[in-house]
Image (cartoon, rainbow, N blue to C red; front, side, top):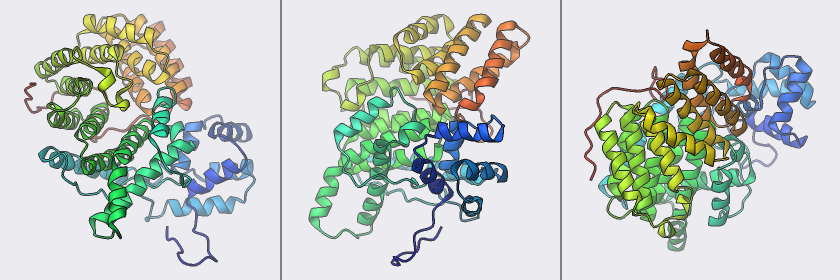
Length: 483
């Protein structure tokens, strides 16, 4: 949409997502409250808080039916909502927002952003402290948030608090909080500032020095934004944020954080059906940090490599990476590791080993590790993700009833977490359990999955068209020697 600049008599036109968010907040309602009001008023119990969130993020635009009911429950003229919705469906649709019923642009945006990230990773490996081209927000890139963050400085303490909240709350919910909006806005503002600097638009040397000092925090904010975007189901936005994080880390000369960004981005690609891309990014991060990175980060990157290699069908590479991760993890000194690795402990490393062994179809070794992980964690997303892998492990063991029991519990945890990551893992389990619907346990899970569907976010889409996330892949991959 065109902003009317330099004319105080005109307010900038609102996007549909902005308008809906403002109307909701003006009434003091949560997204869940809006969904409940819509279902009660219309008599059609099919709208969940996740659907309301998708409307506000403009990943979907409601049709005439729901526009009418939205106007009724929010007590606004339906024409206001209809006009905003019509503008959102126009060809000049906002960055990163697929038109209703048409995801072609979104698919192309993901493919372009993925390729740009791979190119940036190659440049980073050549020199992890050399400036990388600043990503530009393009029609295929991520949108700017409709509800901008307040003009407050972001500090390390606030970023750390948001990271720890992420242990308990899904990315979609955290992005709507004040801290979440602040982190995203900081990353996006930094992108504009770095782009200005790259074109010589900076004004003073003092500003340049101040910007350089802020780059490590910007890199962390963008990395966390990528994680939250992915957990909210925004694949293009997550990949863009990771590319911005890599750019900022390179500008700050932080090789360790740059490697972590690549590991995070690689893990995302692996989880959305692109393990070859995930293997390339994780391996690039490992090569860039294997001599200077702390043991915990190197062990984490090796786990990323192992899982991606397993899903590529590269058994020997996966097993070599897993063995190397175990050796390096034994030399960890957690007190000397970056604060953003606080969550990586022996229990988490064991759980990741179990997941990789499950991907390698070694269920007898995977089962005790994954079972132990579920008894130790209380975080719903973690329980849902590792529960999904444990259910797959029981299916490999032929224990269908036990697999269904674990999948039932994981499904409820996925609902509690509101995580697109968890939803994607459960979708893989649901496809495998479909073969057992003739059995009582299989029917029970199918019924529970159908009832829970409206409460789950849409799972992350595949990064490669036609390839379902989470499955095994046997396409040839590069032979990686682990040193």
